[in-house]
Length: 418
Image (tube, rainbow, N blue to C red; front, side):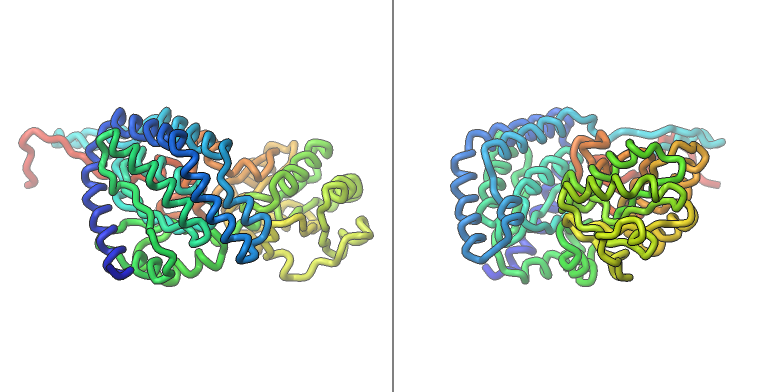
């Protein structure tokens, strides 16, 4: 069977599975998630063996140490995947829930019921744990899913998918509710993006190049974020010690992720008190600073920032620093250079905090907290499918609620329209 026929067959099977899965109870779905977690543990040897093939191939191809680290599956990683599934199973099931009901003058009772989206296609790179995270979230929210992982993780993803299939089968759920594209052929992505008759939503996870390719070539709606150019603005009323700890965490705790701070904005009135010690802390953490002209007068060993630095998602221990006249200039800078991903303000002025929250257009806006908290698990969603900077239909971390939509439900007693 050629690649096109294979993907179309998978899409058709996913549509049938989605119809069946939508009618499954919360107990059935939860049992399936727990069964998958058990199968992961039982098959850990086989999973690690197949993962070792991917890791060896990645080394032969010269992939970076960071990529190999993300690719590697350990016993601890398998345990974390199983624990994640248990956490998702413990979440309240949104499917079938009703919001408020209102009664029309003619006696009709109108409400909205939460329902699955249908079939979701997920295209992602490197991390095999995404396979299990996505499978768990989609099953819990009643959606079938077609997973197309990176070619570098094909063996690992297939081993994980086998455990998922065994768990679904044991729980009596349709096995085709979770499918892995089994080929490295890049044409598979193009074929999947053309299956608008069967697939309801595409979610790409990876670098900006992958996401732009998906957006440019998909006939199916896409939920995405291109990059995370995240800012922390230190206001003149900020508590400086707290601000330094927040900024250090936002940049250093894990610099290679989309919710790490990439640009630090500092109010002119606090810059001379704040920046020298902040620069020392960054230096000790190995952070390279690139500053505006005003910043260079305070931090002499910083490099001069170029215009392109304000747009840059470094994903590394590099930080752009700009001194601003006040909050209005900070917000204008964020509007021009930001990516609607994550923005934070450090301030003790309640009115300014409220104004920043209201004015800044971003999927998550924080007051006196690190940008690293833009994460489904950290925000209490249990897990996330990714972070969307698309406003239709989700904005921010996508948990099980964001993998559903609503339909109107109308209860009558013989009413007819006149």
